[in-house]
Length: 377
Image 1 (tube, rainbow, N blue to C red):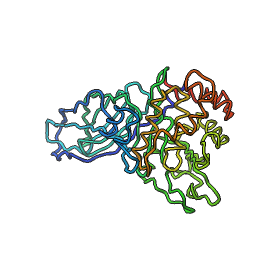
Image 2 (tube, rainbow, N blue to C red):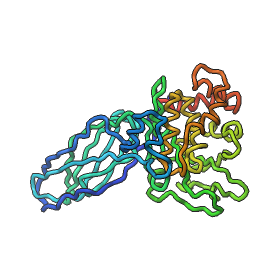
Image 3 (spheres, one colour):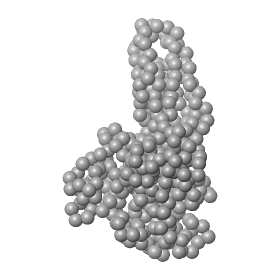
């Protein structure tokens, strides 16, 4: 079993300045009344369009997104409070603390001068507690009581990383034995421009901060092909996230038919990387994070026991990203799924496992390691 202390925070914070508390004259003692907005249960991290799609038939994606706009980002969770000092005391700033009740993720702390913040990238199906501490100009403090809210238990957990489209956590999906662990493995679009001999970084500094400090990424797996002049990878040889982030080019050909059968060595290498806990949290991507990236998301989550319909829904959710043209299920069914279904197994999970072992040559030990890392019972 994976030690929960090794879970790296998957929580992302972006601040929104809406209200500013007026300054007051300092007093001798500080007593402060607090009014915390009660968010309750079923707090949704998905936008209205995303939530409507997730509640609808998975095949109806075209009614909500067509792959031509950036609609993949989550909705923020807004925390609002009112602090009323009983004497004339100036508030210098507030500290907001957010923790998950089960202690699976590292607590976060935000400094702000406002009485409202927007919190992005929370986990799905998670109970949180939060409180605010007012720090006064004379150094004294007053803390609110802890308030609670619970995020809606609906995957996928989509992520806001500035400068990158189509970012999602593989975690949060239900399996017969529990759930796929959140905060370990992410999928996304490219971080630097493709099809150019010169390195052009597209992820912004804010996006880098989210990847490093919020998602705590340790490994970037780039599925693009270097070709003769490094054109698809954009000539990059190290991660834009920093020298301490391991960059691995694990190229998959995309224009030669079946992604699985035509990329056996790279598929085996990917599973070897995913079997090593030292590579986590990790993020993998191709160009727009849809097809080659989608295949690995399908293989990993399918192996873990995620339902086939949920795998289809996750693949089609990429249409909320800026992916140029819409995707349909034919991209899956006419490609690697046909290959997978040739192998023995009463469930899709068993067929994927047998395909990986017999066709690709993935060791059983790697498969068991991935299950140990990624399954939350």
